[in-house]
Length: 348
Image (tube, rainbow, N blue to C red; front, side, top):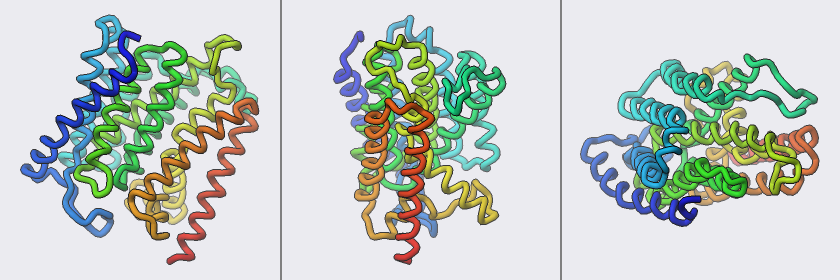
């Protein structure tokens, strides 16, 4: 590593801390705020484009600490990340229709998949499936990227929640990339982690600013890239490599378990109720916890803690392999969800 992890985090955190107060004042002045409403939890108009601040801090950190060779090698990834940022910015400034936003997300996604060959070549014996046809790999990559991008957009409904869950994801992937000597992804991960640490100071209850689509879409997009690269790189490591993951698909899911499962559950419920999957409601996991009487901070800490617990569980039981461990992880998260739904309904 050209720079220590501490240095990367410190630079990103410092830039975010400098930018965020200025952006809060500017957005209030320009009335770029998330206004109170029936489906809103917050009680005041809050600036809603905090993603501008932590994305700028992330970009500055990467440009300052990267070599020219690294920037050249990863130029397509950086370009598509920037395009996704613009999509989020456009939606925050002038709200896009759900289908228009989805189509806009497909543009950087297709560029990324095609130009960097970010394609699943195999399922690595999960469900007994090894190598898969190219079109199947492309479809899985597309589903992973678009799905994770929108999962963080959907779960961004509570002070500190999306940022806290994203921080866990970046730290988990970043630590693994660092151990395996993947320098550039280590830089990306910890630069974003540092930026989010700075942002969370202003986003914690009571939040002074929200990340908005500007931040949520970029977070989900980068973590989707990490998820696919993590699985791909792990498969290429020699068997004796330290921290080569045996249940790699389950581990990738566990690192992002809360946003993934919450999104799947909410969309399933909406479809069963014959509602549009894009319709807004108060059926997210954090809404149910709030109805049980938890505060914003308690709910955020609980869900972040649950996410960390699943990562640790997947790590401890890694020797089982995906075909055994995945059903265990999925079964546990379903049991927790059903229990929470029962308690929430009983409370109502």
